[in-house]
Amino acid sequence: MPDLHTPPATHAPSMIGALVAAHGVIELQKLLALGEGPRPEHTLVGRELYLDARHHRQFLTPLRRNPACLFDHDVWSIESISELPLGRVLALGSAPARGRVKVESDRCTGEISLEGHVFVDEIVCGHCGYRNPTAVLRDRLESWRLRCTRCDSDQAVTTTAIDVSTWLGAAGLSAEMLRQPLRERGFRPGDVLTLRAGGRERHFEYAPHAEGASARGVGGRWHSVVIVGCGNIGSQLTAHVARLARGADLERVILVDPDTYSESNLAGQEIGCSDVGRPKVWAQAERMSAIYPELEVLPRVCRIEELPLAVLRGAILLGAVDSRDARQQINQAAWRIGSPWIDMAVDGPSLLCRVSTYLPGTGSVCLECSWSSSDYRLLGQVLPCDENRGSQDLEETEKEEIESPGVTVNGRPGRQGHGQDLRELDRE
Ligand SMILES: [Zn+2]
Ligand SMILES: [Zn+2]
Image (tube, rainbow, N blue to C red):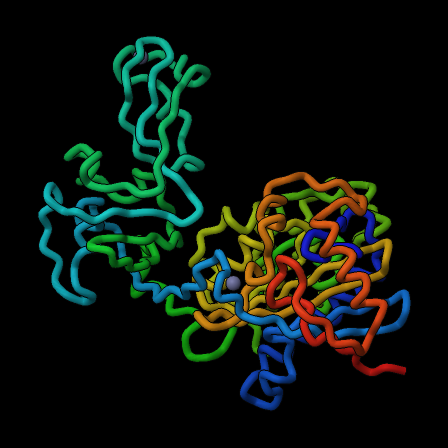
């Protein structure tokens, strides 16, 4: 049984992508209209829908919150800060909410982090051995910082030794660094940073230019959609979402995908010959604008984790990705900003699709609730497009469930919360 949490989407035929995309957009429409007709029980919140096109069957599987889930399930309350010296920001972490901040940067005990990122503490010069204090987010490190401040050698570029840490505290920083603004440490507008002091954490959108930063996503309505992945599934989503946006009060769609269409995509993705060689998000943004010119479409040639988190606030996230890692990133982002997300997956050879919806909350089921240690081991691996993925036990149990519809099946080894009370719908 294919594992639809890590499907080999590369060779999936376009019709199976279209099938799952259509169901994903139906689900999106229900979420957008929640409170006006559709009730939560009409959505796939906390459930998985499996469509078995080969045998013309579908299954609904309830998903349960796993108390032992490795993800913390925290939905963040996000405040806002404008441009401030780092020392004052660190002091803010230990200040009472909305209280006055007393600035004693040389004595403050707060620490700062950006989830999913690490700081480079120092760069050791490969030429003279000097330890250049750095304290900048690693993936935002500009090349000029690799030049040694003592001997002016740029050999540090090739022979550097790097120390990294997740939290940055006042203790390891120079007085000059504490006086500098956050952007000097690699923070960018829209980042949601975490301040920690005395065992307590607060989260802030870094909004250096904002007048009263973004209050997106409040007021109970979702005004935008993020489509993550523009491949077999995502390329089939865009036209539907553009048409839906016309009547649904959607203001904005953000398209996220780091890749470019290649000739091999012509068989399985909703594109034309003129799209080959172009970034996927550009090609899809054009299609959406042709359908609904008033819709604001923002194409982003990057991975989801490279976008500042605050950009996603107020949006429903559509996951059309083909890896565990990307799903985990979407799940985490959705929880932090409290946005629903719809996960879509396909397995081409067996004509199977899956759609599930997650609604963040401390007590609600998340993607990782069903993950076993073998799922976590598979993170970051490049997966072959064959059957040899996941645990063998799991694959066999799943196969039995699908081929014996209507049977209630109890928990699976290592996949607590999944596959229980599997039942067939609309049996013909
Ligand atoms: Zn040097
Ligand atoms: Zn969970």
